[in-house]
Amino acid sequence: MPSAGGILQLKIHDHLEPGDGLLCELKGAANRSAPLAEFFEACGSVSQGTIQRWCSADAKSEKRAEEEKEAPSTGTEEVVSAAAVKQLEKELDASKAKIEELKKEILYRAADAENARRIGREDVEKAKLYGISSFGKDMLEVADTLEKGVEAFSAFSEAELNENKILCSIFTGVKLSHKVLLKNLSKHGIEKMGVTVGTKFDPNLHDALVSTSATETAPADTISNVLKDGYTLKSRVLRAAQVSLKGKYEVLRAELCDSKRQIQKLRSENLYAAASCENIRKTTQEQSKQAHNDAVRSFARDMLDVCDALQVVTKKAVKYTQRNSSIPKSEAAVLAGVMLTEEVALKVLKRYGVTQMHTEVGATFDEEKEEKLFTVPSTPSLKEGSVAEIVKNGYDMNGSVLRRAQVGLSEDP
Image (cartoon, rainbow, N blue to C red; front, top):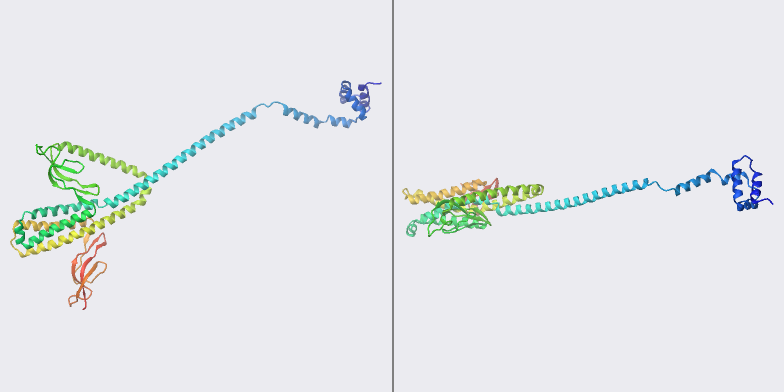
């Protein structure tokens, strides 16, 4: 009985050519494997097409693909992936840092805006409180003049004033004008310091003009004489008291000059710091301006009471001068001082745009500029609806009516 290898060789030999390479391979396989020979014996003859399908190029390609899959990787892909991850991490860190920077910048802008709003509110409040500083300081000239007038009248004895009723009336008018002025100044927060001799010198409140030698009764750094009393506006010094000082004048004056320079420097730095919030400040600038104008108009309107009182006194002084051809020098000086005080008051008001409106008797009544207090029967010289008498003059301020003139109006009975 032939062997399994011989049987396989016979069966394959029937279908393949003797010189075929595939025949040689199958023969070798048949000799090495008895089970393979038994398989061919059981299956019968094997065609060349079947054998070619078993050893086709597709099968070899699939085998090569499996071998490539099993082949170890060269590591190039892993290197590229690590570099990409590193780059992404770098970009992410930069992005997070930018986010933190923008958050801080937003917080800074918000704080900056809040500071600007706070400064703006403070500016508006300061304008309301201290908008009359310049106007009020100039009105102190009138207060000083009236105070000197009251002191001048004190040289007259009570008997002399009682004998001369007109002079007594003028004295009363001057005192009343001074009292009305101080009352209206106080209404707007302007108060007198009331500096007295012997007070400890304070460079923030006092301005030393004269230096005198110190004594046992008047030690150094104390006030020896008050030349002009000082005034405050709310919590600020409106005008420092002008005084004479006992000793150390030059040292204190140098310290005061240095202090003022420091104040000026700090003000400049403060203005520079506030400039960063200019956009928000513009919105409050108009409010500050309006508050300032309202404060000045209110102050000017109250100052008109002083002018009214001074005008009454001046008219009496003029009549007194006209009736008496020979007037003592002391009386003439007092009367001249009264007239001068009215001129000073009107000049100060004019400096701030307050001027007297010219209302004439017989002129047609103008409701916008005049206020009717009473009526009188009309006459041929005073037609109905015309001004019959002027009780108080009217004033305007920068082109707008500050106070209407108070008049009597003529009407037909």
